[in-house]
Image 1 (cartoon, rainbow, N blue to C red):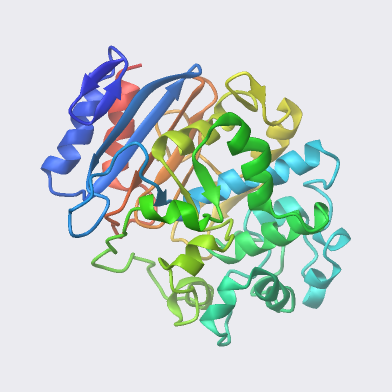
Image 2 (image 1 turned 120 degrees about the horizontal axis):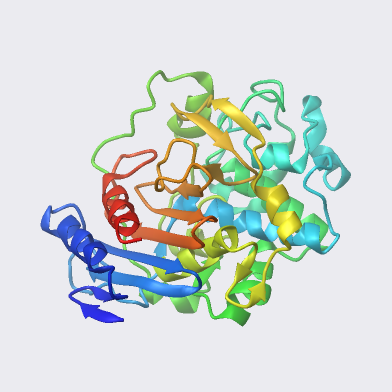
Length: 373
């Protein structure tokens, strides 16, 4: 590896370090990290800038940052592992594990819910925003909702509610054990991966502060589905405090480093493996990542090809391979995987943009990365 101003790159990947430095030179970053793993080798590991808004703490390889919805495919890996363990099946009705969810005709499979077809992207009527910090209570309120469209017929992004659906299913399948506990004890802990869904208090001191975007994202028309998902005062909890970090929200508050996110997205790039460890069977990985629904999303203003918890790269947001996979998080983070090249990577940062998908900073880095292959 070659040491650069912001970390290390393998020989031949110097243009990625240059693109990373350029994002700072443009004045677009506060602190950030970018990592890429090719054929099991860490070829890019870059960090830079500051972990706090006052610019008193440097961002380094141990800095954790919330990656928001970039968490979703990592949570999906846990659900898929439960299929491998015989505790659930992606194509079985949610009602087998969670009968209450089927109120008002919400009869969908687990995979349909994971591909944003359940019809409950948010709450139309007011709720106490603090309910988001009580996952069992929020899940019960969610189960009682009437769907906003016939479940299983359309895709409409569930920015937060997705995590409470999969979290409740995981707990029911595992007899009360949580999704974040499984991830920590069976994947991240044994493999030395610094990623958490439900951040222990002892880790809060190395967490980056978030600089919020200066403008709202462009959602086009404020439809009822978009209002429920994003635009009401009760559409999200107060994000950033200790209680929010510690609560397990598998859709939105995974904390980690770029290196950790790249390692976990490696499951999608390497036939279910991270290094020499088979995290998912190839058959279950194929089931998880096959196209579940394709169409104009009812919440996000994009045409999206959804697998179960991760997007297919048909719009080439994460490199030139339409067979790739990826997901973005609020403010610009992303993780991506290219199974043809056995490549995975991640971009994380704490200065948020208002991009919904395809943040320009990540786009430059991914373009530079592919230019080196």
